[in-house]
Picture (cartoon, rainbow over the protein chains, first blue to last red):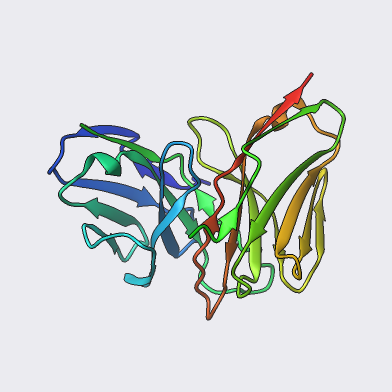
Amino acid sequence: DAGVTQSPTHLIKTRGQQVTLRCSPKSGHDTVSWYQQALGQGPQFIFQYYEEEERQRGNFPDRFSGHQFPNYSSELNVNALLLGDSALYLCASSEWGQGIGWTGELFFGEGSRLTVL
Amino acid sequence: DQQVKQNSPSLSVQEGRISILNCDYTNSMFDYFLWYKKYPAEGPTFLISISSIKDKNEDGRFTVFLNKSAKHLSLHIVPSQPGDSAVYFCAASEVTSGTYKYIFGTGTRLKVLA
């Protein structure tokens, strides 16, 4: 059973460029959340997708946008990259709602490390 | 405004002893809490959770305690093992209608000495 997979694992961009990161959720999961983790910090919530709609959003500018596809996979797009966007981007999947046996657990991928020069 | 705080950036413990990691939060609406462990170059791994209707949850060597009046939770690891050396994050969320937005602390680096 594949867990959460993210691609690419590493990438380097220059300021002003655009980047797209991809995520496939764990089998059976329908909800995808994206987090940004800067060096020495905890993961910061960017947004959450369910049924192809953005359901929650953190304090990130509109340069950060996303998409969820019918197969539940998701993309994170960042436009007009800044040096401060350099970070590890984590995708987490889960099940929507709190049914019987729900533990609240988010399953994380290994992340995409973005370096902006 | 840091809603979830882990005030100890690092902690060293002897193998076999108890490790206690602490976490404070400010939002009284938070009703679900998680602990994660993270090794370098890996994504965070879920350890244990607790809802606000409980004050304790155990899973093997890991126990989480929640003190709602103090807005404080702690993770106890007994006995500590060298493989437990990692960065530990606490996270909190208000869960409403199926949606949740976890706020993470800045992490505590645990080193278990053999």
